[in-house]
Image (cartoon, rainbow, N blue to C red; front, side, top):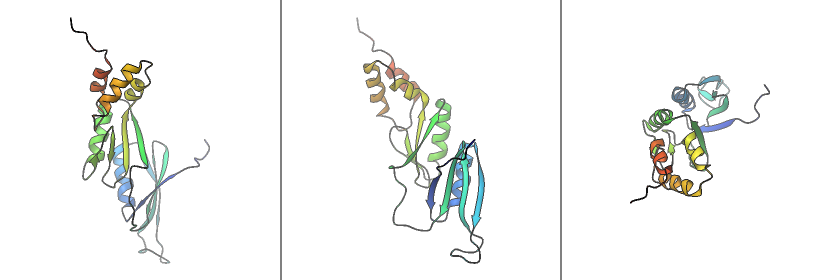
Length: 165
């Protein structure tokens, strides 16, 4: 397999190693591939972490201890996680919003570091791709009321409206 050409780099003040270990604990399918530390030549404390390279589901990431900056992570960049079922959505949602994470709308959240994630079940995309525009409109309307995506609620919205006798 050819080497991947693009690696996502996440800038942290001084939490790169902690963040990499956190993401590995959340997703389970990953590994730290390299840890680089400052030498006596600096500029950081000798032996302290500069960069942690890690993988999640084969996707490469770099966590950089770049120091304090006057900007922060925001929703203009997010990681979309395609979930198989409601149990996976619930599990990841709970882990990523724990300890200071924040819920947002329509499956979006920020983790404790401020990184934005979209926790999306594949069923949502299947319903939104349905050829029936009325079904898509109902599912979209239901989704817009949600924080965490709830598949049973989407399924109920997808069902044709009942007619009263």
